[in-house]
Length: 276
Ligand code: PDD
Image (cartoon, rainbow, N blue to C red):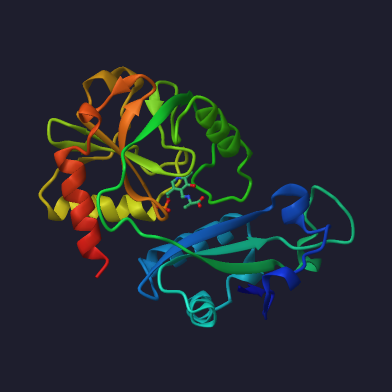
């Protein structure tokens, strides 16, 4: 497993980062995850745009110049990956001592990238159970920050309740999952939360919206509410690693008779076809 760290290609076990790295001390950094299908990064332009947005949000100017396209190509090549997940993380870097205020001019960012194998969902994925939980995260969920404590606490809580994911609500509106966006189906239309500061603007979300429109399915970018949950016909999650993941159950409420609903199935097939 060859990883990239600050301009070098090294074996994963030889990649070392300072304990004074602001990523380690403050989670002061951002990340990006890109799927690789048949040796090619999927929706790369969109992922690189989001990476640039994240870097700009943190004023990580020094990290903007790197050729990430080339980096990802090399990562795939060196690791001989067919289907996989690329992980890129950029932190503000190491400083002489711990101080909340970044000493930006003196710091070089820490740039790390790795790739791991992934088994894509070629066929129908198994529908999962999710748990409805209050969204306790901060108000800049649109930044793909490595500071994921809220997400992790919620994922753990969902797991403790027997859920594969959580469906989060804030002030009565469903925002997203802990590491995925959601789509609700009602009366043949798709509903998903708007891409504002309360959710991560998922690349799979955007692609699903595009595919739905190609299939002639109307998409309403408006949050589903907790009160609406009783009226939904189908529900699925989207993320780079999960693609389109059908949901069979929210807590004890069964959805689409616990099966993959027809609209979800159509989009799974459209998604699969779009990978070629
Ligand atoms: N998670 N919302 C959150 C909070 C996420 O962490 C993710 C992705 C998504 C979906 O985004 P995309 O479709 O671009 O993958 C939505 C990644 C995969 C992760 O944390 O590993």
